[in-house]
Image (cartoon, rainbow, N blue to C red; front, top):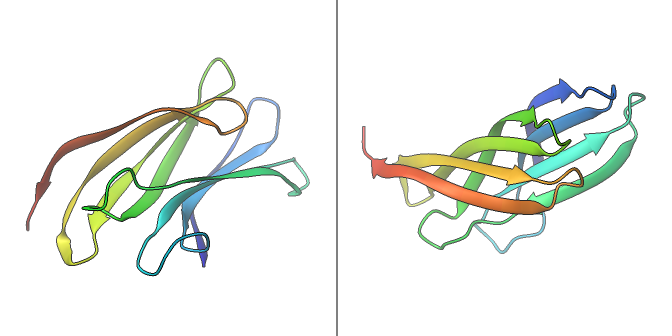
Amino acid sequence: MEDFNRAKENRDKSIIAVGSTDFANALGKTSMLITKLDNDGNPLWSQIINPLNGLFPAWKATDVAETKGGGYFVCGIAQNLFSPYSEHGIVLKTDANGRLLWCRELGLPHRL
């Protein structure tokens, strides 16, 4: 299942949308989904960013910003599916085609 949380228009009038998917994962894992569409809504490419570790197997993209170089900064959350109140932030950068350049998991998990 795909779930988009944010869509924004790029400088070239294309659209970038971010969210999550569990389509390409084993049971119980959720990955970030980044999709670029032309200005008519036709898909140009999609990239799935898989969790880097098994402790926080649910990654969800919540916002996106285009970089000056045409790539994207994506932020989101990592959640522990077995402890729903344990989560922390993720920030990553992609190139213009959605390929991952770097990814940082930020902050320590916290409990409410």
